[in-house]
Image (cartoon, rainbow, N blue to C red; front, side, top):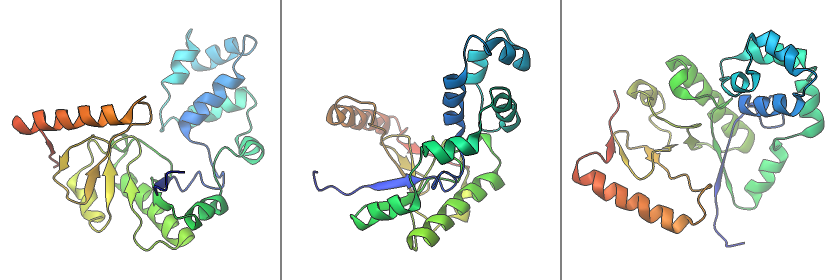
Length: 215
């Protein structure tokens, strides 16, 4: 409407509804949790507070998700096929034709600080390869899922020719190809929020805390 282009960063394993993001699995569990099966889930998880336990599940809790889905008779493949929560390659190609860019956002959206260096590299590589092959983009950009906090220089050496984006706000980065971005989607007034972040940056610069150092 405003004539401003944007980049949509997508997870390669979710495009075309191939698999479900783990946080969306948590939402689906709560949709199917009721007074009748709550006790059953409590016994399965060995806890009197299943809601709290379920909310705390992480990316790596694959087996636990499988057990809960089986107990609640949730068919993930059927849900993906019928509900289609994610965009298809065709829909993304249509956005591309309208002038938007498509970027990489990892394969399955894990928190990078919770997975190994090899897993980080594989997640990024799968995502970049998918974008390159599917949308014919030779050098796609990459946005870290959640945050780039704790990502090492060894990782960046592997992707030295890839422009990437973190989520630390207005800060410099010791890796020049990694640009920090501001999350404004939950802010009522983006302009006010950006001004505050710039003020933060100025104050941090005075005390030499405006740059992210990596090892």
